[in-house]
Length: 218
Image (tube, rainbow, N blue to C red):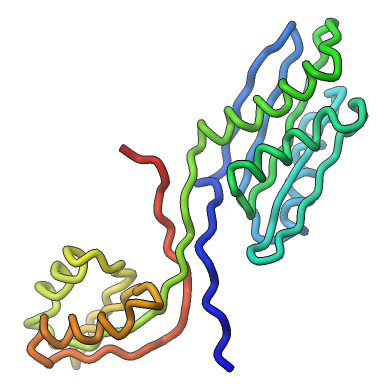
């Protein structure tokens, strides 16, 4: 049986830092993209070393696609007031392959359980808003072989048609263009290519990958 096609998923665009102050306490949220639990734990360890003098370095992460793995830690805050609300933000946004560490420097004023929940959740939510989101969409990779005289026009036509051109390789015998095509559209792509090139170009399946599409851009 063929392997099932992976599903699209959301993650953050990249690493980022966001800070807010609530009743003199500083909450510093660091976000990072990770590919597995080991990377998430390594990121957490690095932030804890960097902010060794802070009272708390609370954490949450989600990694994996179809069966995501989740972890959180209150790191000394009252149970359920830090790591859980941080993790809930990631869940609510539908994010994976994302780790968050919120460092707290206590300002001398107690926030209470409800205040802590809101503070840690807000720190992560505002950090996510600041770095932005993207969708990783699975695509079939096809390599199109075309002669030099048609390559430039075909490149433009592919982009205009909404296909993802990942690479152009100029060789003595011709040009090879790597294209990302959503799996359900592969048959339609072959038809489009034949029409666009008068049957002079052929496409060969070479694998699978993901393309990254920013979410929420105007």
